[in-house]
Image (tube, rainbow, N blue to C red; front, side):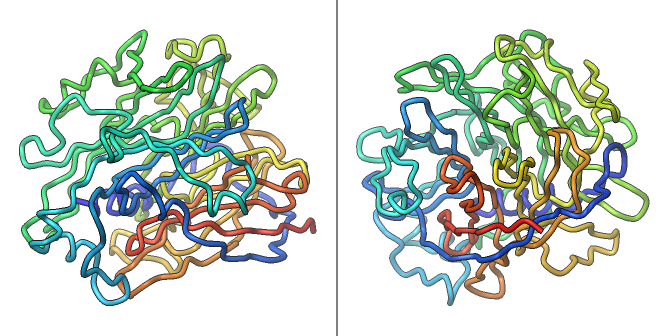
Length: 422
């Protein structure tokens, strides 16, 4: 089951969007130097053997809250070598089946905003007993009807003594005994919002002020009271974006800007695209007060179905932050290039980390540049979930820190990137 977020990254990363504010200019930034740092959170006391996702939210007290997707819990990685066998095959073996469990999400606090200290700092996970526990629990059993139905945290923000975390609701086809899936069977059907109130000991899911149409699959109806945006495909294969895949941590012009990933189809190509929403901080829990970028200008509207594309080529996870050194907004993500109907995957897909810049949160965004190519452990490995952690930047953003995840090694890996203006 660990492979599901990997498959989702591929499935949601192969969509193409042409509407709206397309990239029209160069990034006006160069990558001067990239340094591999180390693996994060591998040393912990919560029995965590690996996880992906790795979003971070800076807190007013100087600490940082991190959230993760599918998390392996157990005593050790006994008998596993990421360079010699696939992790899904290892998880299908008898010992792993008996000793390793997987939960769909976890979270932790860390006390430092110094990237060098981060490498050795002790993470404080949300735990039950000695083991990490889910921070956002689904309304149904995770393996209901022989399908895996996780809750995966996305980005968020701290506001007025509350941590808000957006999340996506997914159902996935079951694997066979070998840990292999016969068909790509993924359905992202909803997006929600969770909240923790200071001192941040427990998250609760926020019910929307107005609910969207129910999910198409009756088995997912129990989640409907918590769904803010229905992400099922509508007419003409349109999809409301899964808002919350990136959040600007400081208001701009009084508004908080929230990016959303979605699937779009264009002629013979499919690619993942990004749209944009905004809301006043005092209305953060009221979905009826959200506005969506529906045209250049910028032009805003109340219908999320009309949200346009601001850029494309990303996998569903990303980060957006304002970089004082560049004087621009910076988007960082794992590259997921356009895939044709023949299924041919372009070079660099879910290997490269890309960066774009913009003078405004809504664009227009520059063409992307490649900043790094992830280190694969073996031929079957992919490198995904890339994003910047802006609270750790140095020299006003001349030096930024980015994580990505190797599916084989399955922990966030930190890289240091030094930027240079053109």
